[in-house]
Length: 198
Image (cartoon, rainbow, N blue to C red; front, side):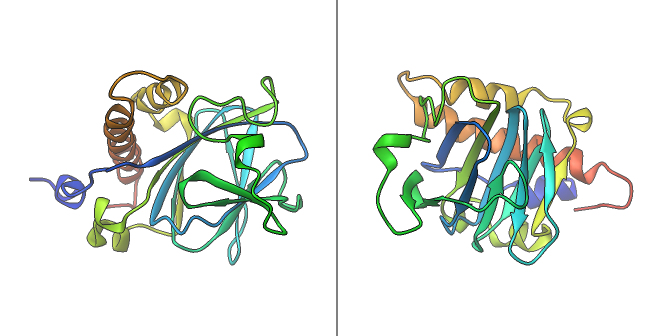
């Protein structure tokens, strides 16, 4: 077994959380779901990932970001945009004062988000339990990594983005397996870069 396969052998999503957000500037979401690992890709526009204690990083269409938790971070149209929505575990949404707005904004699967034709569309999948990805993998990863669209050869992220907007039998199981495949494909591209190894 190669080193990457060994590192990823325990990765298996089980009831992962998914989000398809359609947004119009200015927008910023405070991600405070305490998830151990999340993947995000941009289908339209761009998004800035703003860790509390690190440099903001932009992701463009087709780029895939892997963010290691459980520390909160912000995703927005600009690093300076202050968040007005907090994303909690299970894609529960609140305003900064704690008012639940989940039903009004509906940022989960099969949603229109804030606007049906917003200038930014971001899709994410979140491993909610650390055991779903394994401590060895989490220890091997940086806090955040970005794989540019040009390096993501497999169309898994596209399949995930398409599937998250459906409502079909076995939906959660299909999404869980696609999240696993997206993680594997993204890390394969990441570790194939010069100077990185599992």
